[in-house]
Image 1 (cartoon, rainbow, N blue to C red):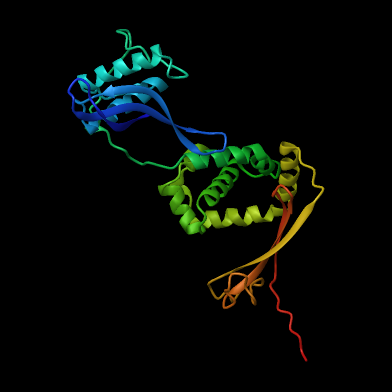
Image 2 (cartoon, rainbow, N blue to C red; image 1 turned 30 degrees about the horizontal axis):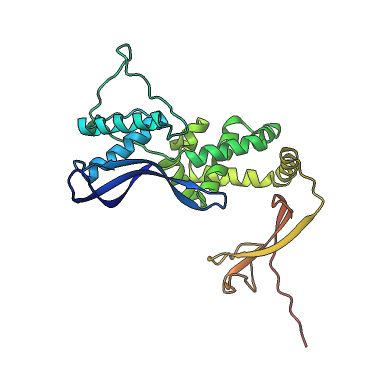
Length: 293
């Protein structure tokens, strides 16, 4: 909810003044954004731009039931109380959520906002969603059936989550775990004890479980989403390495879809269903078929 303005003659002063309306954005049936006028407010010649934004913010907080921690000026509070009363009385809002009562029995404390500091701020949202998805898919339970220890299982889950949220090498993934992500706190791991070598080791152990994991995930996604794999699609692609890859038994030079035929390549194959769920995957040696005349 915000204020929209236009110029109008003020009948009390006879001069051109700014007339205010309360407006909100709404989405129509076609998915477009439109503005809906909620209430005509009138003239507020004694309000400056900063106070106008504060009034709109306070009204939104009061309607949604949020409590403001910072006291506003008496003028702003008077306008908010008057406009909120009009909104309720004229039934201009669909739902009214009253803020928590500031009764004498409540334990209210004043906080000096300038004394608040943020320390060790970490990302949480994407990590939490990925972790819940992994648990819904039963990857943690599958690793338990494969006799993985609790620490190795949690480290593997942390690695999967971080590589999903932040696609990078093991070295950069380690820095992301220790400096930015909250995944270690979510899984009860000590980020300082995790090393790059441990991530490399856990990656190799996960790859060794590839065939069993793919079978498990194929069945689990069918069960969760009631899928029937009647149509299966097979797709081939290739990716390149910028290094020499001299000791690699898979990488070869050839024609690249990404126009990087100067780099060693590997071929990736995916089997997916029509819903886009990956059923099986594999990596092939890239080879060049030569035709001799």
